[in-house]
Length: 300
Image (cartoon, rainbow, N blue to C red; front, side, top):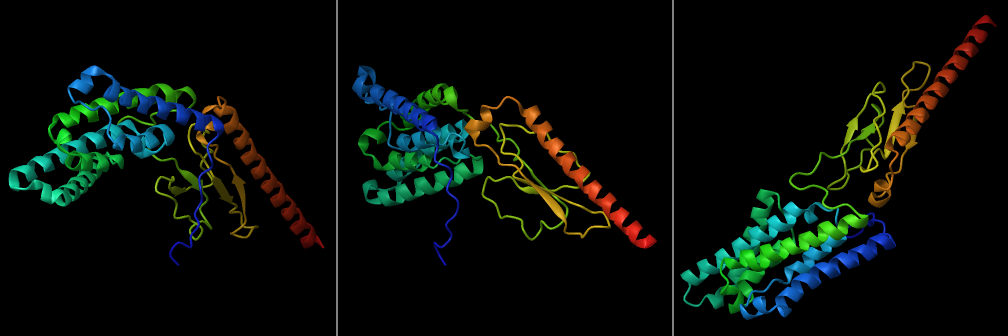
């Protein structure tokens, strides 16, 4: 039934994260707004340094710093591409129609739709970019008069200032960006050979995919900056045990703030390696006891 799936909400950010999100967004928006409304050069030359879509961008680059949509490539690339599309659509419609104001609906629809497709092709999807394209064709003569200068001011200039604020403030207690050009490869959830096919989770969009792992593979080092093994299942394959016998090690992946505060990844990896070896030792002892029981029964 539609709407029946509750899903899993992410954890509410810590007070520290909330405070720094507020500080970063306040600094970024106040900077571009102050230049636009209070600096004589920009006021007298009618050069705005802020547009409405920057508010939506602030939510991403200051409040969701680990989102792929908030990374610099998407943030600046999405805005610039959308600004180019919006200005181009406006100029084409002005040259095509005698009364282009009667076709604002067409200009807006084309600007947003083409921007979405180009952002998808260039892998620079940034949702506020759609608003940047729409603003270029629907915000009146003062924006139309800018022409392609709209790409430089306010779009390129404003996004560059907001990005500088993000790079400074976001890195005080958090990490930004997660990448500049390309995202790193997704982490791998190691699972056992058996009894996992029917229980495999469909996962989320950016959740690491699972990979089958044999018992002979070594336990990988734990990196506290990555969401690592959530569940590792190692089935026993000795003939004296049922095929579905297994033990499971649950490892909770710490959130990003906690992970970045850990500086002892090797110790953590060593701890789980010892747990793995202890479990294997325990299983071998059970096997020996079973063999002893069988030999005693055979003598009797």
